[in-house]
Length: 242
Image 1 (spheres, rainbow, N blue to C red):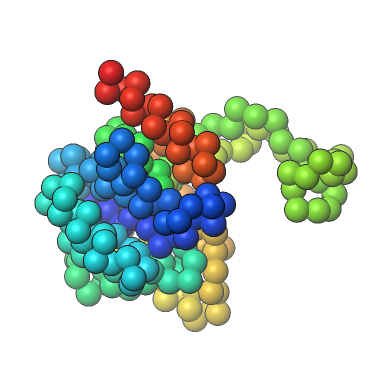
Image 2: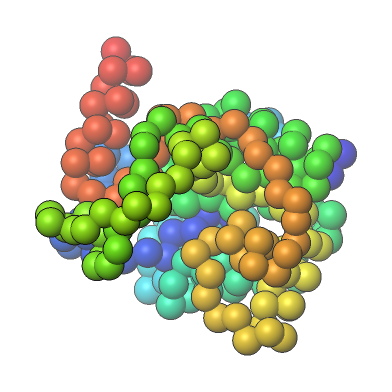
């Protein structure tokens, strides 16, 4: 069976949180968000190694936190880029020299600490059987398109265009690919002058590396984006731990 590893993206600065440290290093219930996330992959029997992509100034902190949390599968801290796409690209480039090309790579946001064992299992299974796996949830909301503006502002003009929610999926992470495929995508992106994409799966679409295959996500696997998300995460931890 192919070796499976986690590539955790922890290079963000969390500007919307207005915190003194990036949100992945915020302590919640005795552990940082990053430690909670690493522990989820540490517990999974099919995950062999955990790599963290972080800004160089936080590299020693990452290594120390992995040691303190007992993350025996922690393999290395890799240098982040200027954005999440560049961080993923840097991580994939580094993995090329450390892992076999048939390794299954689960690329995951550090600030999704409630990723479950089932989500990890489904990603690995779908990737091995279909070639890749994108964690998704069905949309439960109706969506409107605005004529102009940045979105979310009061008084925006609504377009007559709408998208049926039955045709929409919400993407989460992990995004799971075989390392060989990731390396090929990043090489092609560089040759085509692509320096940014919202995620690895959007890049795959842009490069027409399709089809992409879904792995069922979960509502609890939400991304910590706003201060209220930290409060919700803490409440969930207290509830689940009694």
